[in-house]
Image (cartoon, rainbow, N blue to C red; front, top):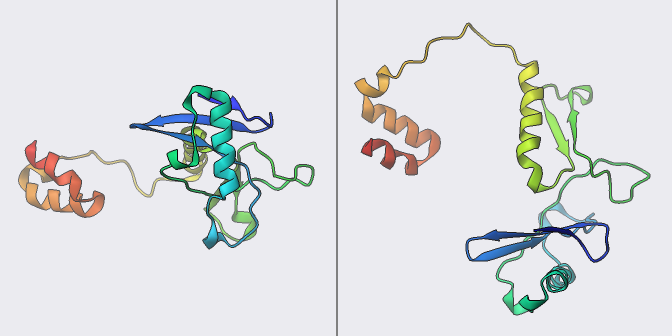
Length: 167
């Protein structure tokens, strides 16, 4: 579910997850220590009020909140907008002496797929192959399955090795 907050300016989402729901986000301006980010009680209370306004039969209270977290979404500076620009922008940091590095500002978490696709397009347009394409061979898997499984486990984690052994 997506709606406008009671203020009418900010989005409000209710996203189901297992037997719980995620409500948020808040748009609190944060200028403190990056290592001290945490949800404020007034933010949690505001989200509860918002949920109860949209879904009055829930009758949520602070004791219903099992988890709360906070994060910082970098927004693009704009002197006309005190909380920053909301439109997603990709910044090439090469002019700042950091070639090959890009930063993405703005964009809520719900647009992570399209942001990833946009950034992938930009990066791939600037990459050049280091050699000619080669034919992919699965011979190593058949010839040395234990060595291959060890590589997969090291690279992707142990949880991948169990399904691979069963195959």
